[in-house]
Length: 179
Image (cartoon, rainbow, N blue to C red; front, side, top):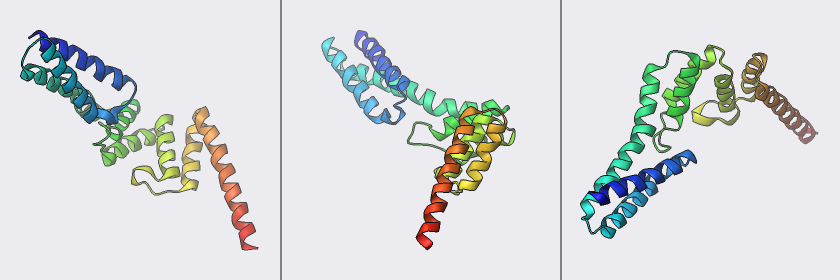
């Protein structure tokens, strides 16, 4: 039992440390680390590997509880622009291997329709980059950033200036290549 508790503690510490670094995409290596550490703890305390594997499984369950179940809970309870924005962010990055882009975009769009500046910036970025399958459209990206800038978002104002400058340079390059 000591091995399982020690393994669980060490596995949770590793999981939390990596999660705080936002390394969500390392869940498989993280599980392997937990199993190895928990197994080592089991051998150190001369316990069976089974108790250590149970501890590692518990670490994985805790990981999925936070990175898989939590986005589902936030998504199902979202009611304000802020909560829809948070749900969109969580669904977009859910365990990094299992994003739900359509639902993420739905939540972000609801928040943007309510004129929530961070959501407007996210939607504008998607139009700028074509991320999440959104149609790439610089003009729409600039217009959406401008809506956020009009609501006082300083980052959106910088983005508008940046994209305007890019559009101007691209226009000049296109004009010079036609001559």
